Length: 410
Image 1 (tube, rainbow, N blue to C red):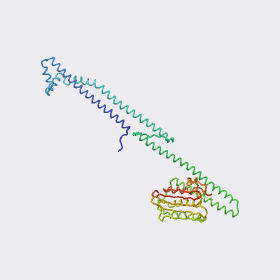
Image 2 (spheres, helix red, strand yellow):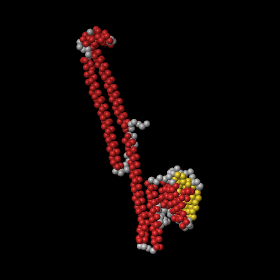
Image 3 (spheres, helix red, strand yellow):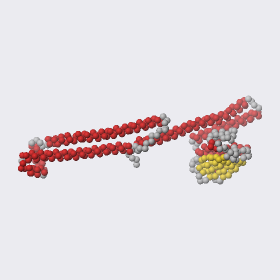
Image 4 (tube, rainbow, N blue to C red):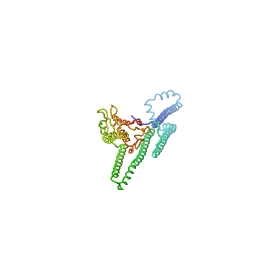
């Protein structure tokens, strides 16, 4: 159960309670003083009566004292009737004397006590209000600086008061705003770089298209015309593939791609990934070796995974010489499904290894038509499904790509 008041409020309430207790004690003391004064006034009254009677009747002293100590109800009634007979039955003179004495002695003390308590309460309230106003001013200035974009402030407070909790919550919001501002800045930088990269990558094929269009406009011989048309189609296909790949990367970066969570057999995945690569394999007369565990699989998106694997195998085909070999092995265990794609091609230099999965990165051994986006797209697809892809290679000894998709993540 949450506490009703925080420590800062508890101090004020506790101080007021202490003052109230002190005022109560002072009131009790004044009451005792009033009782003592009243008893003394009564004793003085009795003494005056006895003195007056003894002066008149000295021999009746003992009897008068004894009668006053043992007053009977009949005597009280008789005394009242006698006082009424002589016009003093209401006791105004005696009462007014006692009351005047009490008022003269107690009124200044009571007024002083009331003034002291009220002054103390007023002082506490003013002091508390000033503290609250100072905290509000501080937080207002803090919020204005946050609004201006200054997220380096630290307003945390180790206290337990209401404002301490508010400051800590504001600091959490500040940290979240700073993180969002940093992410937004990174997104802006990435978008700017992406636009620059796209412009650069599309600029080359567009220039080639312009040159080919000019050559075709000059009405070249039929043989040259056919060659120009084939090159024109190749450049158009390159632009189409580049735009499609960039759109897919943009969707992956924005997190708008909905991946399916369905059973995927690795054997079927490899078969689908190799379908568009049969012609390049036959042209380069490369040997393809495939082996793996029957029934091995994972839960993920079949189509996206097949496209990613196609890009990996395509990279191996491009960097493997004529008559080379490519091996695909797959397996699965309780933790992850694993696919390994190896070749005996040129390999990757040590300088290129850390950047091989960066988009638009072209290594030393990159092909003429390579744009450096296939492996970046493959990594983005496998990462989005809770997997990862790594590569091991040495120059002249081929490359080995290891893909792992962990179970129960998608």
